Image (tube, rainbow, N blue to C red):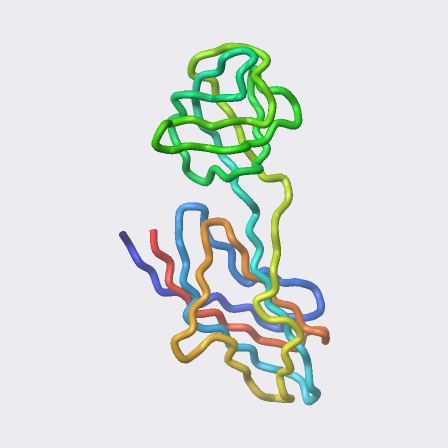
Length: 182
């Protein structure tokens, strides 16, 4: 595994969510520190969000007409219960109900409408999920705030984004220190 230490810089962050960092799909990231510097002579508030775009990808398997089970699934990377799936022989509005990696099977909420061997199935969780890491924290005038320090860490999965916004236009310089593990 290769590890790379980096800084992500975003000058003059304002009232619109600004994506400071997006993790590549093939990496895991540990955020070691976040520093917010107030560029103004007034108090400002800052919020940090983490967004997960949800699982997506393709896998192959075998379908039997009238059965909800996909057999001989070749990979379970990123697969999650509830993810929408599509492909030849898979009805519209089908999602993953359960999966069993040791048995190489996936159960769908609908029965297959055709039989096939080595069909390709695409899955995509249509709704990205965002959550605040911090919300409306006060940053004093002309000073800095360290959001992560002293041993605390934030872990980002592949394709996660880290975004920051302030309540004042062009008010924050942001430095995010992180390590990428490929």
